[in-house]
Length: 231
Image 1 (cartoon, one colour):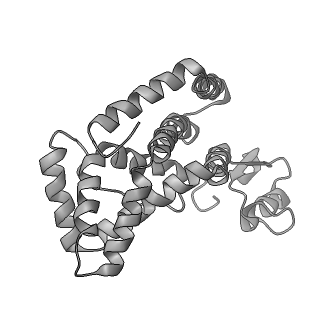
Image 2 (cartoon, helix red, strand yellow):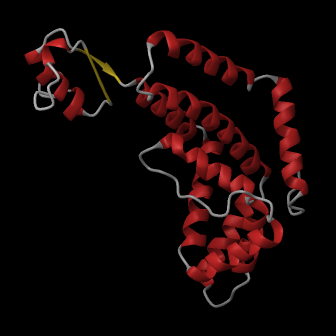
Image 3 (tube, helix red, strand yellow):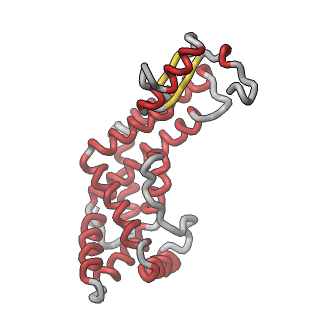
């Protein structure tokens, strides 16, 4: 800060994640700053707190945790082989020609909110994914991979997987918008509070019987495109 001409004496607030090298009250970066400027109060980054809340929701809810595990396994089994990737790309052109999404995305290990892109890709390309897994599971050249594809296909065709994935998409889609606002360079407390309240209201709205009916209708729409589903 000194090198770029920003006076530390004007610092009033600091915000980082909860890592000890940043927030530890004796030797963390926040403590070092307070030695120079005691008025520089430390707050845990609220964008990071949002990510922790979303991560805990998904990790501690069995059905959501299992669905994300299947999404991760899908990426690993399809993208790990050029041959299987080509089968998948052919499936997209045959059964998902109108999809704007043309590939699967890996689950980010550090940016939880970005998992929204991965989940959205699976929902958009589900017919091609199922077709690809059927082909891989019937391939006798690699019994280990074919067995893995068969087990994964069974998991994906379970209606609980479909319901869980739709719910995850709703949660991540809504919180991603708030996360971007929280990380904006122009954000202020007066601007962000209404957005936080709107996000909470939206998430609470998902918990109503009326909205669950909308989720079920989306499940049926997706299932119609994949005759193997029973919803």
